[in-house]
Image 1 (tube, helix red, strand yellow):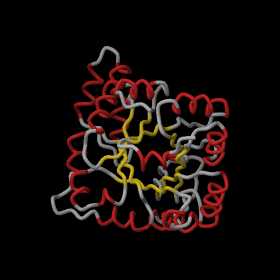
Image 2: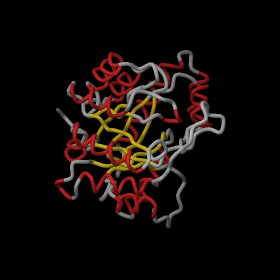
Image 3: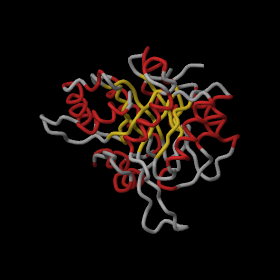
Image 4: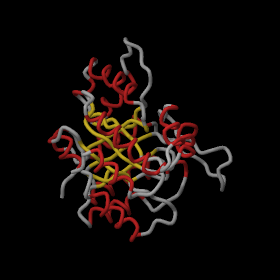
Length: 289
């Protein structure tokens, strides 16, 4: 079975695709998506109840993927679990054979979230990174390939990226951006990471998506924390006679541009629309595995 961990060390451009999980997603749906995405990507990412939207337990999804020859990148956050539960899940992931984790503090639940639920946040993101590093082991014998979330922004020329360096120090060896649809801004941001030599310590993954409509693009801009959504992308979708196909084209163009940015090691492709648009964008970009 090819793995994300192996791809990071052997390929110039690593590609993952993200499962679309809802409370209705069952075993058959997971396996169908995994078969579709596993043909075009090095690994498949599994979210962890983003925005408080409940879906099948992440480790259950990971087990299904591993049983069917697809490498999972398992997301975990500090919002939904205390110290004991986090340690339990990390040990469980280790036992299953999970080798890649994407760890984050997690987003706050909306004030009107129902039913009213108490967020945990016993740990911060960097402490969770350190915990995973400890449980997985250190050095070349570490079982876990650990990632953290970063946000692309217009950084100053003297920016030292201290929080990103701290994440690397805590155990992250890949850093994955929030959704970014601005290749120029991304190029400037990553250039600075290259200058401070952070890209020698952690591979940079960029998150992109196939968007089915201008309305969806506006929702991402207004509601997805850390996302970068230029007005030009929204206008393209708004003016397109076939917005779904245009969303595929936009994503494919981004993938081609991202692949050529020095310091970027790969991309994660997701969608809020039809899951089949992910392989369509990857194939259109010519970057499939």
